[in-house]
Image (cartoon, rainbow, N blue to C red; front, side):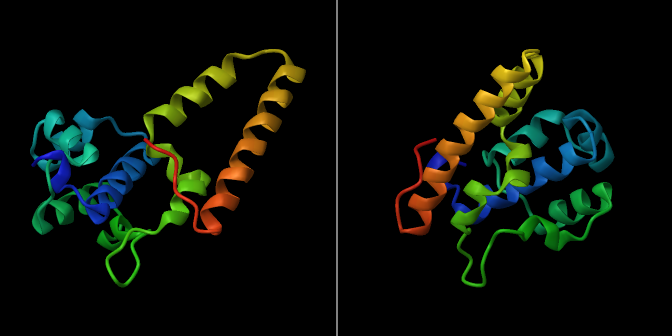
Length: 141
């Protein structure tokens, strides 16, 4: 699938698959083995490079022990992905950059520095979320 072929619904489903896999502390290889594909295929599903058939989505839900509807969280009744997930902390578990920020933050031992960083990030996040609620554009990815 070309990058332009991946729509908001595909991206949301892909993100939710990654989020659920990480929540259960499974590697891509473990999930791939459970559904009978390669870990590369799981990578493609999670990045939106490949669309996921209904049957495969059912297999993934079964392997993770969750309802298939979980993958559609964040999609409204019109099929549009909600913008609100950009400021929802739990949705970030699926994003590589967020994991990197958390990892770097956890290596900082100075409590005052950690507090200053947390305040700084909170200030940035507050301004971003306020901009989105006023119809502002989301930041580029």
